[in-house]
Length: 444
Image (cartoon, rainbow, N blue to C red; front, side, top):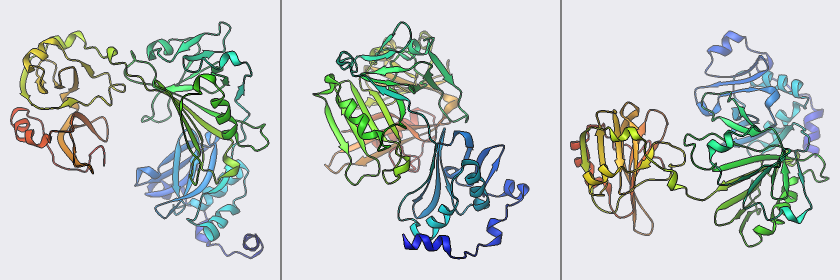
């Protein structure tokens, strides 16, 4: 405590260049600057990770942290952002932010002179009203594994198996338009939602391209301003485990020397996850709990193929062999994975098959059950990546780099066949650029 008092009492000499706000033209042309414009906190950086454009009214929590020995201001709100404290115009911007949000800017001095990179340091949290309540009635405790109930006049019950298209069509759904082009469309409910014995005012999910499968993830940020401890995580954890239908579920907790305390409750078909939304050492910020419900079931019967695929013209093709299957990890997130048409099975003899469709300008990959089809114009190149596992086995993948995403998308996968043995064959038969670079490997 004495060393903190000294910071307040001693006469501090501040670099005048650091406190003087830079002119706007300089900031606009700077590669590493931060400023406030039209009530938006803006960070411009040549490293996109440090970019930020957030309405100050949407900011929920501020704290200092350190990543790879780089001191950062962390901003949580509609978007999570990290701004280097070394940014041009940081101090004047931080002082403006302190004035707008009404916190003591001396915390920057304390962070720089005493804490540094040793720990996270809480700055400010918005005080929001409580947005959940618990029900005492035992009759609700068994419904959590079946679905959730809208708190409308009809008390509409929605199964976890309800597909996107059905849920999105509900009158109680509100579409939240994203601020940034890269953000997913978000849906929320305009009425409270009961999940087991919990009634949540904040409940939503993100959009998915495939609309005929159930919503995979629902989530809520639970806040409480009435608990004496101001820490709703243990309170909500106890409430979740009080649901009778979860008594025999698998329970995992991470609460020993971890940054984020969490509880994971897993049944055959569902996973319920609770965690404090911010690091545990930020006591004043722990009034928020993140609640995530994940549907673990597979709905492969929803993977069908469109009629247009029948009208294809195979211009190039090649057939592989061995224990190779289509990588289905992303089938929920893309509408471009289909059941294999019968005529493709006949051509390929149910073996792994790659083709170019000149009629529809598409590139296709298929095993004996499913096909993943891409627009040729969206394909940048292909690559084969093989990892040797610690147990002596392998994990080999044929991936495609598309123009839509920054990572490699796996098409074929095998744990017995090194797909490199087919590389020259694929290059010869399928005129698509090939690269051996590991730079874009999805599992790097």
